[in-house]
Image (tube, rainbow over all chains, first blue to last red; front, side):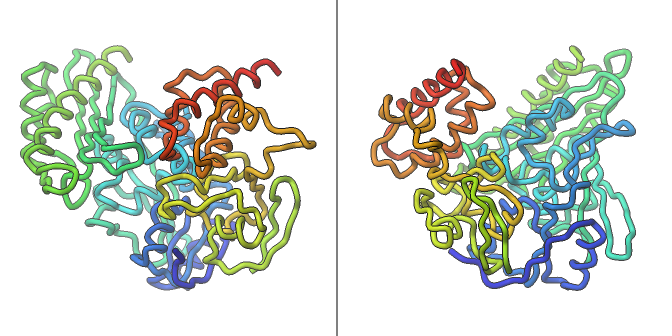
Amino acid sequence: MYPSSFDLTVARSVAEATAALSEGGEDARILAGGQSLIPMMKLRFAFPSLLVDINEIAELASLERQNGELRVGATVRHADVAASDLAFGAVAAAAPWVADPLVRNRGTLVGSVAHCDPEGDWNSVLLATGATVQIAGADGSERSIPITELIVGPFTNSLGEGEMLTAVHVPVPSGASGGAYLKLERKVGDYATVGVATHLELDEDGRISSAGIALTSVAPSNLKATEAESVLIGESPSGELFAEAASLTADAAEPRSDIRGTAEWKRNVVRVYTRRGLEQALSQARSS
Amino acid sequence: MEISVKINGTPQKHEIEPRQLLVDFVRSTAGLTGTHIGCDTTSCGVCTVLLDGVPVKSCTVFAAQVDGHEVATVEGLKSNGELHAIQKAFTAHHGLQCGFCTPAMMLVGAAFIEENDNPSDDEVRWAISGNLCRCTGYVNIVKAIQAAAEERRAQ
């Protein structure tokens, strides 16, 4: 299968990339790992007129901790995240479950975030951990927005013309914290039937000071379970509390029946995985 | 556009179209047909090549993106007329039936044993989980990769 014809520019800097994007207009796209974009082009679901390849921009390849954040550059591969000692909590838990080993060697975390596929794993992790995304514009501008403001809908982000994501920043908690990502998949490399990201931070008295829960594949976009999060905050962790949060999360999910299972069954998986995910996050936080 | 690429150690220059896929470049332009096309949808992994030493699915990379990089295919495993340890192990342990997935399995195995020269069954199965084999049930593939790892360890 072949994509329709397009022009390709290999950018050597972020400024070059955003300038090319801006000149290319609304049909120009960034090419990073290409593990979602190239299949979509081959199936003719996407037909950009211009691809701006950012793989040769050295500054985008860094994965580092700075200023209390984990910074993941735009060309950092899923496999780099999985292999890194810097990853933690839900980020570290999700990395080995993205696609398959070969796709992880090429695909990028930031590309997956920009793609806004409701069946993509990373946006749930970013919603649960309160991450922000770094955006570069064609006029040399830079801005940073919370992940909640990037996700507009299925396969739709809020980036404007000439803008690209340069990095994702995940805050590194200063106190006790833990996280998990539980993914039910039919086989390796399949999209999640259900994915649940959880994140907990504890204060000095062992109470929950911050909580994040977000879902993959059970809504038109990755879904942040805000009501469930709010019942956790300020409370002492307990089985009953987690059961209540899990139940609220299941209520918030909007699963649909498809070849992977019925809506009712998926909602139950959300409930069970949320409870288990919170338990795992708690045990990690207590041993951190 | 023109690209410069090292294929199995040999520098080459080729004129290509931006939309040419790496797998077709390797097979049709470079004439190396050991790299196969299976699903053509990033699932089966039979099109695996090593890009700068890292296994990737060449049906999901544009040839333009290997400009200035190194590609290794199954044809490059042999060196100085001698089979690579992974090739000897696949032969000795009968790690194939029809052979269609074998070039990819060997490339993934060759890259994997450089990282882990004493892998468990589970570790090997995890490493090859992006590659489908429809004949063997994987048992002898796993044995072959472990045997090659042992050979690597002994070196």
